[in-house]
Image (cartoon, rainbow, N blue to C red; front, side):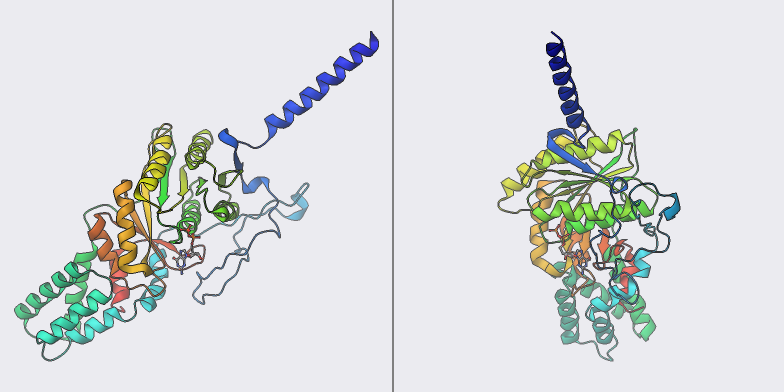
Length: 394
Ligand code: GDP
């Protein structure tokens, strides 16, 4: 009898132990895992991410001085994670202006030189149009800009250097500006976090943009949950986790590659709601096998999120160096989901800034953010005046 009772007690203890282990595992629904930097020891284990955001452009993963970390004597157990405190988003584009100016391959100065010629004959106007087309402005806008400038020159007659610059600046600004708001909708509403869905072709810089955006939002004082719903690219979730860990943003990801993207997105949004986060940023896969595949996948991700809350922004990431080809791909995405804003990445590279004009015109959606380097803080809210001045070398 006693042996029987002991056996029952042992079995009960074992069952309780197994139950507790299962319950305490950090899992969401659908086998989705959450990871938060604050629960991890990251000291010494942080993978390096190049930081070219300083004026000197050198790469470093060294923590900035304002990092929050308790002094060693206050720590208990393993060292506390080192969290970075990113700078706020305001004024970033001005800070990165030099990089933008360097990358525009002389498109502004070529235009200024042509417009300053003593005689503006038909050939010169053709050349002006050609410069604009080569800068990825697109054929129709290039023609329109050229024709507008031609009319102005005719009306105003004489042209000092300053007048030429002023005229060109006004014309380019008119082309870059749109009536649509460039403000990112990242404020909590109706007691729910704002949800930002990030879409685009693989390799355009989607995951990097999600990471940079999370940093920038944290820099603006917001709490962020990242959803790693690019479940097709094996490294994407790890990459996102690294970004999240650096600033203390929780990352919701799946245990297995190829998992259902919509489940991960759903869990990320659920986590954001539970934790009363300000923003949930969801990375997605960008395979372009067929338009139908894409439509099925992105459509499902969006629908599933909307079971919990509204999607506030669908940001389409476009690699500025891919010119008209990138634009064609962007068009496919815009047909599949309602894009609310464009993120133009790699504008620091060999991009020819005219793509800003072309993409806004083509998709009817404003450029809201620009990527100006691989450094963690090289993502800036797009500002038309700063952009045009950078092109004109001002
Ligand atoms: P994804 O496949 O779209 O998620 O692309 P990734 O985020 O992995 O980025 C692809 C590559 O583009 C990486 O090497 C990034 O560092 C790089 N990248 C992303 N944004 C920028 C940018 O604004 N400027 C530069 N120069 N490189 C960038």
